[in-house]
Image (tube, rainbow, N blue to C red; front, side, top):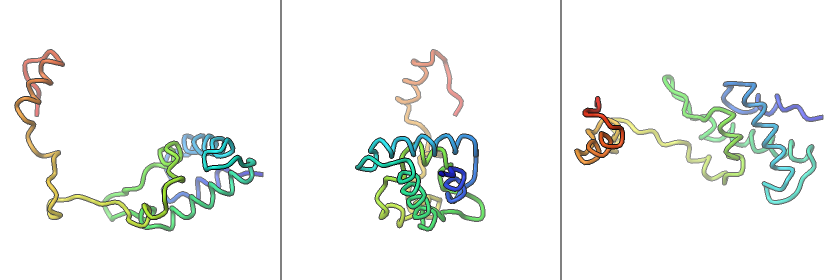
Length: 131
């Protein structure tokens, strides 16, 4: 018997359990239909998904948390995106965080170019856009 809640609990972030369980059930269905490269029985698909989830949970990307932020995707997002199919090497890198001292330009705080503002005004039909 498959316990999809066990897969949810194996994932390193626990948010929105009902949505996550539905996403896990759909992931198992996709894996059964050959998403991972071959057709699998439901129990095999469950075992594969559990194994991949545990691998992710133990990787740097699965542990990508700071005291002030959690950079891991919600479980439903991860399962819906079929992220369990990713190359494990991607998970070993973790997630790159940007901040004021990392040498990367933070475009969220940069002013928009005048032509972008003008195009937005025209598209939205407004005279000004609060920036």
